[in-house]
Amino acid sequence: MKIRRLFLEYAFFARVSIAPAAALAGGLFFLTPTATEGCPLVISAGPKQGLQAMMGGYCRINGATNPAAPMTGPHVRRRAFITNSDGDSISIIDRDTYKVVKTLQVGDYPHHMIVSLDGRYLYVGNTHSDTVSVLDLATEAIVKTVPLLDPYNLYYSPDRKLLVTTCTRLGRVEVHAVDEWSEITKAAGWKRLAQIPTGKDPNHFAFSPDGRFMYVSNEYSHQLSVLDLQGHKVIRQLNPGRRPVDVSLAPGGKMLFVAVYGEGRVTAYDTESFKELDRIPTGTGAHGMAMSVDGKTLFVSNRDASSVSAIDVATRKVTQNFSVPQGPDMLEVTPNGRELWVTSRYGASVNVIELSTGKMARRIRTGAAPHGIVLVDLAVPRKSE
Image (cartoon, rainbow, N blue to C red; front, side, top):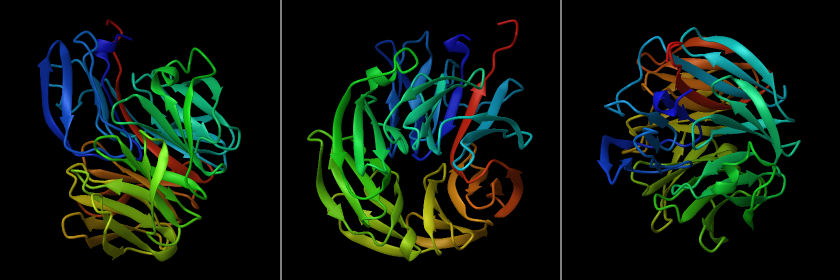
């Protein structure tokens, strides 16, 4: 497959609004983001490789004249990848037919995933086996398994120089060099730069727009750690409430949202002063979060209330609630902004909500305890190319 023919978009736990315009300067394509959260940000590539830009949730490798144009046509493969934690597997779903096309065994107790910077692989973190399963996105086959301690969640830093993982069992964040990580399919090891203790059960996090700071939720020590990535240390501990889980930045990066499972709400912070701005009631078991494509709405899953709440980012008010059965967990908005995909942790399924109507349009069976979700749009070359 020629890279210049490859288009890829993906979404996982980072959501960002981004300026649609692209520019060409010094032989490099680039996009300038308006905000970053979780996984980043700007990837530059020469014209032969086409545009590569991490949009904090959406990554596109695109050699088209208009790189920001939506991908259409019969040669685009739209997939949803779901980790089945109790089934030690991932489900691959065709987002056009809403059918499971493949189920693959991975390591023990998989949770979250990330797409490689070159857009070729999906990395699946297996916490109980201390491994990462490497899936080739073109062939949709597991091509390698490599060791990594307790990889619950995986993120890239905004400058692409770091791979950061949360280790829930070990109570710490690990920082690795991306140049080593990019060689993961060739070698079994890479340089670990730092281990940073944070608290009990660190799981989700987000980066500040400049990539210097990280905001890490520690679910069972009931704190949110602010990490200085340059100094590799915790500089502040915030108290958002009992059992903080997912973390999300508003566009612009000046407001931080934390889903507080034990109190059924979202806590909002100012990221400059770290002053608590608001407590937004959503529902019992507030857990996962996803930002709308336009950055105006934050969707929050309420796992024990069997619902998803929509929060207006500007007013910090709940504007709508959707019914989602059997433990809605992690969620993602499709690149076209029309659908919200939500895993049901207790129901062995993933649910598709039509955002125009607020109704659940599809329920797709998966493996046991579906958790993480990644959406990928991959252009498949014609046979003649």
